[in-house]
Image (cartoon, rainbow over all chains, first blue to last red; front, side):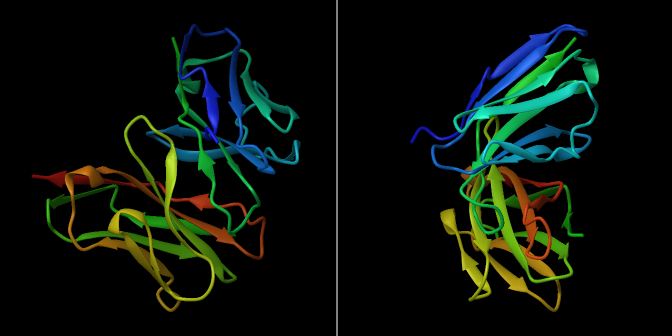
Length: 114
Length: 114
């Protein structure tokens, strides 16, 4: 398996623009997680899905953020409109189950909002 | 509610010296415990995990950690540091009585001097 795939790897955009980050989890994994990593706040869980259904989105910072998982092999995280404080590295991770199972992280998308 | 404290945002050691990265957790029920490593410009990957059984857990690259319930600790050690160990290390705890979704610490940056 190729592991968790994220695209794009780098995104530079201007304030006010819409940004869409993409993730393909490992095949057969039932859980998908979106994280944000910054120097100030560390690694934050934004939202997670189980079998394509959003379970907990309490980490999503504002209504400008939305996430979808239309099928088992694809998820998106959208920011509209983007702001400079959204600049961060966004990770997608997947796991077979919750709890004891390892989370497999993608390489991340480095987002810069000017 | 579960939480994780990693003592020291940066740890500096000489090549060949002992590595000790500290992790303390709070959990109302027996936890599952993890250490992840993040190399520059990469996602996190699992080093080792404790779920049940033997409290001394061995992981990849010569790392090991010991679950000490009385001290609520899960410190990571390696007898002899190598330059390639320079990375960010994250401790995580998953609460069996809660959502089972891991909570990550703020991370510790390991610096290895030649």
